[in-house]
Length: 468
Image (cartoon, rainbow, N blue to C red; front, top):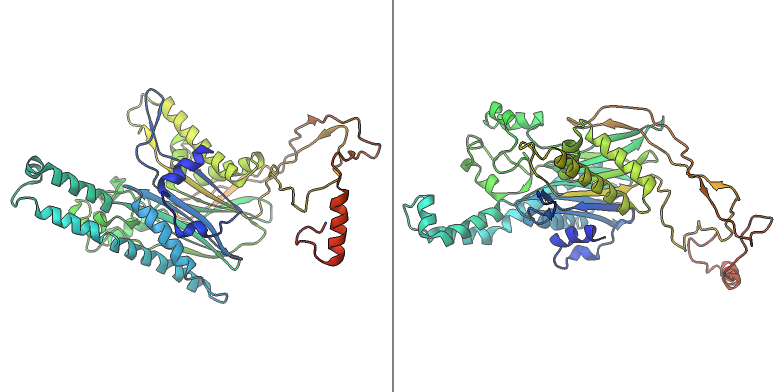
């Protein structure tokens, strides 16, 4: 479990008011820190874990999930994750609010968090201004570094903090409807089955990067050269065309050669929002992920249908794991292993970057079966008189093939879903004490339990959920 604890602890160093919020029990989280591949094989992180995530149940019928993918430090991701949760928690939609009103609530949350984050930088900006006054006038940057290196180094440290930003993807469930908002390249996938039992993967988020034609059009209308944009993978000091935070690129965009001609701030915090999607029995599970997950898989496998690939991995792990966290972590671990093996197989190719980024996966299950789930002894479905046959036990697993539907540049392939009987035949040792009725004789005396159970049921004091 150390792989789960260490990333989480790196960004959650102190107590927070969100620690007391109830978490959603139908959720699993998978993590992996960024990795530099060393020739000696020893693991090494390039930077501290910069992702943040949450999965809260504010009240019955109102849930909140998020993934924040930080860059240039975790300052922005930390702040935005905490503040966004507060904005939603204290602005809970009313029962009769329309879809448009709920989406506007999400939009305002993003705008308020962006404004609040920029205001939180005022002390840093004041410190930077004071340091700049200490540099003698008329010096070039090189000359300043030669004469007052400590001042220049402190300014560079502040500029690094001011560059901190975050992509974000959030999901809100209210009155059995799903609403999704995002900036940057975190993704949200909803997996549903259709009338033919085909599992479909729908990308509800929008990748705000330089592969997005709508974003290229928006930037070109601001006066940025479209040809140079198509040749680039980064915009200023980041790869996303939208984000939360990053003061340096938003307030100082004219200092970047590729952005200097823009008529207004090109990097914005305005989210794309979708909803409300009715969650019915066809809704199977929801995935929120940082870009590190799907990019690692794309690099390692060369697939052009990465959403479908990830959904298939999740379905496979539903059949194998006992918990939702086990499912999510197993998917992340597979991506990590694939990427490492891919790099080691191509380590002589200098064009391949010897590293990968942080990975976070939030899995919200709706009704996809988890056949190996660890059940609680107090679960009403537990039988006190198990029947054991003398031959074998067969496990039936549903092997779902995936159809994918996307937003923008996402996948679009459909294939048929089939249910396979994979008979995992395991010989069961039969105890000699089994009678002719095939019931195992009790090795624990439950007579007191049944006596008290009958009395409580008669008096109407039986705890809820214990009636069987």
